[in-house]
Picture (cartoon, rainbow, N blue to C red):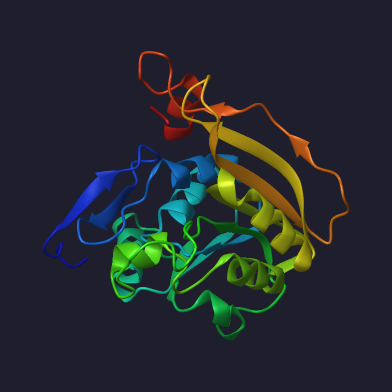
Length: 244
């Protein structure tokens, strides 16, 4: 593997000894990506596609936690895609994880349609035009719907999933109505949801949602996922997800 570039570092993922390359100049993964990796269900032998993969943390964690057969991931930004590829090499996972540099709106040109059992996505959260952003800044592109929006995510997932396949997404609680309406537009029915709260007494800030391609109406919810205890330390569930 090539040496680290300027401003890059190697972080421990606390799973199977896996590590990930990140940079102070790009968007580093947060707790939302880790929570999604704990929420997504991947059965033995299933094929997985991660949209908007960033530096590849979700496919690497899912490979460590599940018995999926192969994990594809797509990332638009060249610098992030390159770090993701080098992280895959660093962990010796070239046979299990493939990183593709490309636009999720063109997924059908990179992958066979209807070929995945599971799609995961930790997409940009903030609608385009909300506040001033530099639309060429890597962090802004990761956070704002500059290069892809909710509609793009569902359109790509619908094309890539087999009938009966599952989409797992993490997003902001305030976008829930947009998310549900767009999912149904693409025949992706919300089936299970968990609300993420910073503490037991605070309202939800994030949502973890499972969608079923071609599923009928009927939504279930689990108990809220609480991130912090009263003393400010991680909850037992979050520590378990982090494997700490």
